[in-house]
Image 1 (cartoon, rainbow, N blue to C red):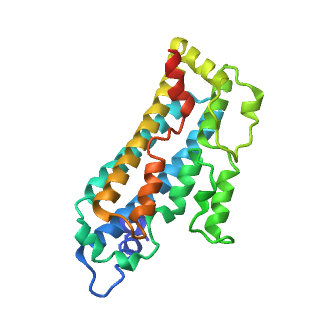
Image 2: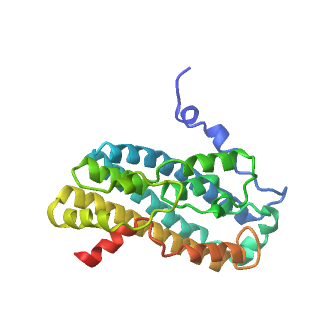
Image 3: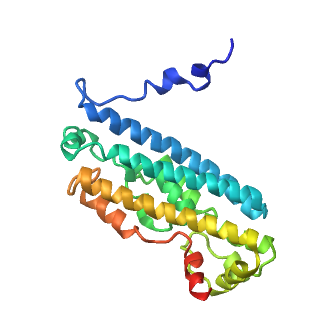
Length: 260
């Protein structure tokens, strides 16, 4: 049997997955489902690209690093633009079906939590909402045990000839990364003498900035469309977003600017 567009993409299965919870659904419930399913697909791709990026960094392969970073940045910007679509849903529209969602908010996305972990998040709240012995928690624990992205970047610095202290390379990756003056020494050298590595650094900064913009737009969308005091959005989600709003993913790359 020949492969067709529909069979290759499993469209019959895919297009049956948008199922509002009631027999007479509110119109905007379909939009809510589609947007979040699309987000999950993009998160799957982001995690896929991050695996390649970490491998390329640890092998010192700058062309693949730069190409993959550009793709990651473009995907994050695509997610950012999709907030515009979700904001066409008014608070009244959302309130017409939100009680059916119970605790099915975006903060319960195991892929989003894993994405944050790969980017360096290390705190117990990452497990909130997942059963103690469930597969989601096991998946997140596995992610925390692996190197985050920035630790792979530090190994990239060593691979291309820069000195990084052994205690940084051998640190406990289950703990948050703390800014490192010795790493910043290498970065300051890169910014003045190494155009290729400088481009890698700036692409990481571009990714960090895009992530901060995504957080901000997500926060304002929640405040505007969902409001406070109700799961799955509400005050808890707003507080979580505000707490992390301006937190840099790669602090050394921001702090080194004070030296340049």
